[in-house]
Image (cartoon, rainbow over all chains, first blue to last red; front, side, top):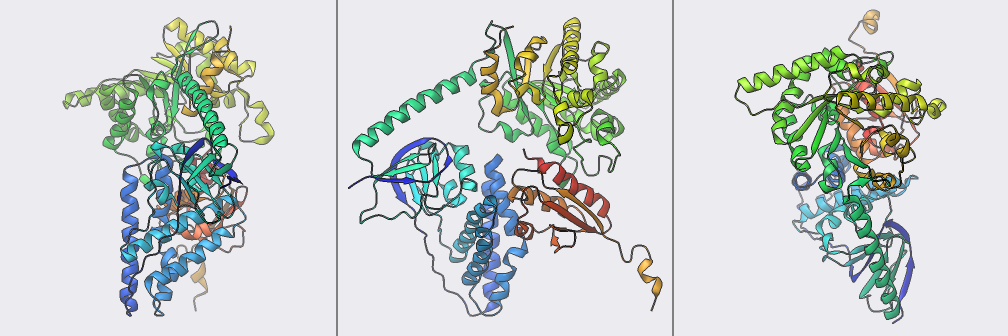
Length: 532
Length: 104
């Protein structure tokens, strides 16, 4: 039997070898009643059952996967999805048939889309359709995949993907599909190689037993000759060794070429950003944004909800320092019911610490939650948009008051060190005047306020340059103030992840850089090349 | 017939309208649609969106209908909002679009 080479599109990188599992659609049968009212009730129950099942799955997962499932819940929650089906049922059509008709129209709409991202959503609607059909018939139609196998199919749904164990290897080879599909996103997140668009998978007689999937090149070889397989296995061994070297580098602490130790911290926007990350890749967390807690749909979070989130982050860090920034709303981050609408120039308006001091009833809740969380690790608290020392002093007095009140109530608490973000030129120029426990340079705002140029306004974006000598001078001045006062200075803006600036930043005397988790390995590699 | 009827405040509310360009990478896609509809549902006002200033208008509280619009990156989203909290609602949905729905 000759080996079969198929060329498609790479959807998730990596190499895999394994036995082939062909997925074919399972068809469930159900007996319909003649009563349209009963059929409508059956559909309603099936939709609710499917919705509850997904909601249950969401509880156990986080991040991208949860987003995908939340999309399905939102669609199932929306009567607009099932309305056409109920219409057909009232004319005497069985619930399963009606649901399939209605959803197939929806699916066809997505398949006809010009935009690939919308075309890729067809697989999600198929998933929703089949899940509800399974509930209607009472049969589990989600195909089961054996761990470590190469799944060959026309297309696969997120449910099918999630039902398989990908920790034992395995890969996906699809006749259709899209690199923009949710399954492709899931495959990339789980490290499962995936190739799509292979064209019709047709076999002469016997089904293939073994397949090699090259998720880098976008090719699949079914039933390889022994020599092809040997070469492929050699490539896999080389690739695994290279990956191990990169992973090891991520766990090493960062040093410049001349041996200076640079601390690399993480910036995160929510605890979900830490999912699956080994805390050993970093020296702590340099910036936790807390705006996500205040998103409009959820309203203002109470003390216990905030405490639980802060504590989870401290637990993850296992004793490494964690710097949480108090609410930095306003500017480009409006929060319903809190920030001022239609400010003429929101970046120069009531934002950051200014808003917190103007709304002490909201600020106090956050400070209390932070004091309670502080007993669970090395917590530091930083204040955004500080311009004058009195802002720090007022916030410090509020923190003291909440700490004292908690202690008086007998609640476990600690007073975390209070530092400031240096992002207003006034604070950078006079950093020494602030009695802060640490300085954290917010390079995005410091750059835009120094250069008077926003980075999202194309016509002036080239002026928005953290490498400009004026901005670097303000950074140097802040580092010098920290040295004189004996307090730490870090930098947590996007400039920290821009490896073209690494040498310039380290030359200012900075020894602590904070970046998003994805930039850690790249930054460490850039630091290793710096010689000052 | 009362001619004054139409001009009495609160009886025939004039819709607020505004538009914003979709800046996030993938347009009004699965996650952005969910975020937008969740945000819209937080207001009592009737909130509609369209790809053109003259409509056709789509209920911004329905993820199924919002997804059917298939608004790609770079498209201009027009909003039409009517109701008691229409000002806050319009500000909130516009902020979400300007912010790229919090995506990269």
